Image (cartoon, rainbow, N blue to C red):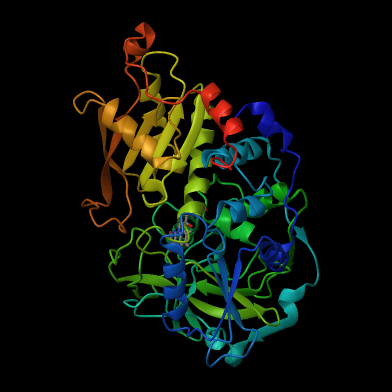
Length: 488
Ligand SMILES: Cc1cc2nc3c(=O)[nH]c(=O)nc-3n(C[C@H](O)[C@H](O)[C@H](O)COP(=O)(O)O)c2cc1C
């Protein structure tokens, strides 16, 4: 897509307001499924898994109500961002695209022009409809699910946004970090090495200080999407404000003083204390395995619960692909990789896609128009090493301009016909890994592979690579016009 096309929607902003406004619009799109009577114990997670696994990006968002043992209206929402249209709605982008990579291109162009807007403090908001402190605190007043059959606990935070404050610079990060329930007043907060919330916590703990946190577990899907994105050190609140074209209204948390979205469904305030740990996990993980061993990890002592009437707990368990978070993580990461390729001056990038079954960031394809010898290899190394592509990557593949990076069939064809295993591979060793990877190396590193599946540049120059067997654009157009019923 030409840059000018993308520029035309740079002024568009997010049209809905808050989770409830988002649900109304999703309902109008016909992408909301309502389910009554599913149990919190594995049924909601399994229903979502079954509806998503073979859906190829068409699974609905699922709003569960009438959860046995809980009041009517105490709802959970799964699968918020498992369709491209819902992701586009969330980001304020056009809803429909010819190729999957086009939404990444639009998002990337939008972010490149973005002017962050700081949140706006207000005195009141629906999140203050219920303020629970002291003995009354009980996070299990919500229908908190046990998501997978082999999980040992219920997890209140999955599609969540954990707000932490940098003790040096005072900026607020939002990260989606899972939160296990130990009891009504104690929850976990698993933050992986290198993530912003973890860097904040390490700084506090190094000084022997506790760290305050707010766990938002029912919020605008835009905040959830940004919280799960590998963004630089800029508050996700400011980026969300920029994308909306209007600041996020926030109230001040009674315990933390942190900004909390005024229309948020559920916010849990608390603190983690150095030296206080509990066994955390096991939990069905994003790589599709129970690969994350149970470990002693810091936990959160809950001090306040704020929630709206008839609250909606947002959930996003992960599992064997394709899961309900594959698209959102893929698009979020791909736009950051594109940003890095641009920032490093790599020319003629036409597409970036993280394949959903990868899962997410483990199989990245970059599509370029080759301009010089070494161009393809340059793109591979930047994509694999930049912040958006570095965490837990495995395969990075570069393809030519005639291969749609988002179409796995075409990518495999390029890998099978334009790639020589002896010269078109680079290996990167001791890279940033995840212990969720069943094959992580001692010291928590991983090795990864870069695949140059472009036509060798000298053959391209000399025009010695054989022509492709395809139907030309002209003949396609002619036949579509001649046989409209065949190609409607
Ligand atoms: C549903 C979901 C659950 C996640 N759970 C965790 C988690 O438990 N711990 C973690 O460190 N990252 C988790 N992530 C990934 C982070 O949210 C992601 O790496 C994000 O970039 C972190 O934000 P940060 O870059 O501001 O630290 C999860 C992502 C999603 C989509």
